Length: 260
Image (tube, rainbow, N blue to C red; front, side, top):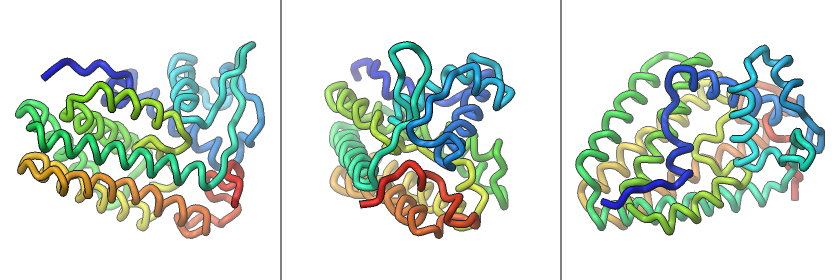
């Protein structure tokens, strides 16, 4: 299998050591944006975020860069960032496009035959996700672990396909708002309904890996596309005010999303 060096895969690798601080900073900063505490159109600076979150500059800088890649922030020519706004349709289309490309990658992985070593890594990753979800409730650390492991699993699926061409297109899609498979919000993890959705997502992870191992390309593609639709469903529930126990006024992304 040819070496896959796409930055889409590298960006989705699991976080370890000091990098776990980057995951926490990313989740905290994303929540500030999606809850409306950092309003759409407002300008934010690295130093101000460092002081607000009480985190060192390195993880904050990495988090800001990641949110720019996700399309939540736009870098300004003279430094700093501005919080973006976008339409509900923009987000739905971005998630749909990601699911289409991930489905294609899963099908190619099945049809071409994924390397045993990568399949083994994927199985171990899913076992670790099972351990995280075995807890009766997810705290912030558990949710951070889930985000990192979910990113790792998706990256392994992309790697199995051995298609740098499609990965380059996926990189572009992942820069669209909410398109990332790990574009979660911390507050979503604290409701039973949200945790149940992660359990369903994990079952789909298992199914797509089984389809790839069995060389069932059509099935692998269909499962991966359905997997992305969980994010679509979550978006609809967030916008309708049913995603968490919070009031509709505090729903994530409401203040950033322009309704049709």
